[in-house]
Amino acid sequence: MTAQQPLTYDAFVELATADPAVVGLVLKGSRAHEGMTTEHSDHDLYVVLAEGRATALTRFTGHRTPELDLVVLSLDEFRAAGMPGFERYALARARVVLDRLDGAIARMLADKARLGADEAFREADGWLDAYANSLYRSVKNDRDGQALAARLDAADSVGALLETLFALDRRPRPYNKYLEWELARFPLPGWDTGLLLDALNRVSGTGDVPTQRRLFAQAEAAARRAGHGAVLDAWGEDLDLMRPR
Image 1 (tube, one colour):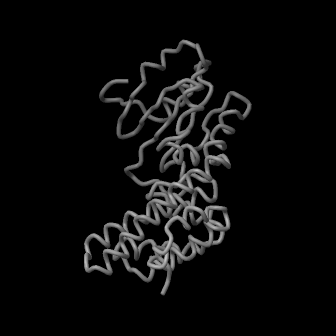
Image 2 (cartoon, rainbow, N blue to C red):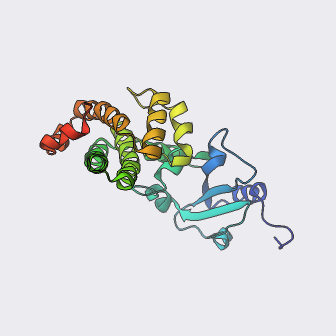
Image 3 (cartoon, rainbow, N blue to C red):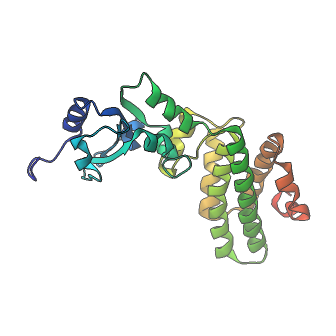
């Protein structure tokens, strides 16, 4: 394509579909999230190639325009993408455009959307401890009159809490952009979505200590039910500062 005629999404999909080396096309980002597309949304497309197959489409590796971003990779590379990694959520909610492997591409996406039991337990353990750490620092700083530090620690705690809650449900945490979208369609078990989002908004914006403590009480109960009591018990008497008064 010329500079006057940039490569469009539809044109590339037609080109890739005609190439037998392409075994899968996967669309991620806002165009894979119903209702999230805006006038600024581009098309983020994974182009999955059969192992060892030559194709001229490799010339599009790294292609980026306001209309179309391409990631060209082999089947093995696609299988490993986001496992672990920042791309995991994007792929977990991606949309299959082409699957020449009798559903194997779709099954790979499903695998990325569901954390393994051991993996989820480890993730929840680590993020729960990080959440408790930021929460404790926030409440202690508020007590000691360190208002800015308290708010910053409260904001830090929100990310760790979300990582914990999604790991407890064996799901990758969504990007902040898609948090409300995700929870509206796939609520976290045991949590009222509206109340949770309101609490997160208050904590991240103001560091409100009573709200932080109420959130912790619910998170503590969920974590203990899932077998993570040892992480919390390691905090000893410091838990008293985190719990509701």
